[in-house]
Image (cartoon, rainbow, N blue to C red; front, side):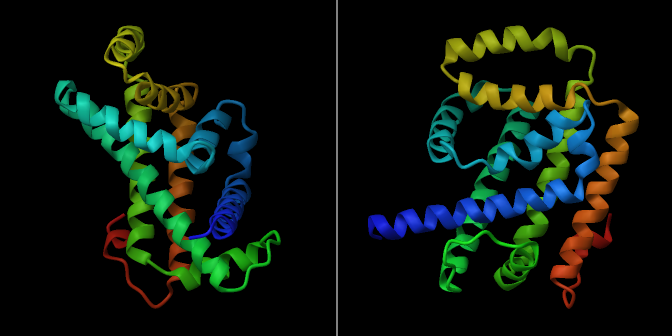
Length: 220
């Protein structure tokens, strides 16, 4: 791939991410403006889609994770693995959508909501989209539960210290950001939020893949 093609692909990926985040901001506008939920929705609906330095982050994250996963508790390892999995899957889907966008003759313009939805539908990959949604919902619930355990606040400082000793501060910072993002949210608002996300995202998937029947969705 030439440098020009790489640049165009990167720009297309940036546009796909921008359009996706814009959809989230419209779907969950109330939570993007509610003080106690701003950090949560920005982290789970924007930060994980941010392309700045993402390749370098993923390379370093996987390298350091492989070195220390044997020292981690099973629950901590599982939580970190789902965070890495979400980043990998999201990056893969965004990249492939960007390639499709270029193949469809994209000239660099800002995608409208209708154009994004058409691209989303044309790309397909329903199974991967459902998996992505499941991981997002799982991560939201998991980090919320962890952040609101009384002992959590006492474990953050020693965990941060150990991460610095082991040379995995970057990984810990990602987990800590997720922890801090959900910490201010009350149980009532979180339940309302997660229910709305679950409902609206499954509705979006059903609208995008109307002829497909999702076994996973029917279980919710």
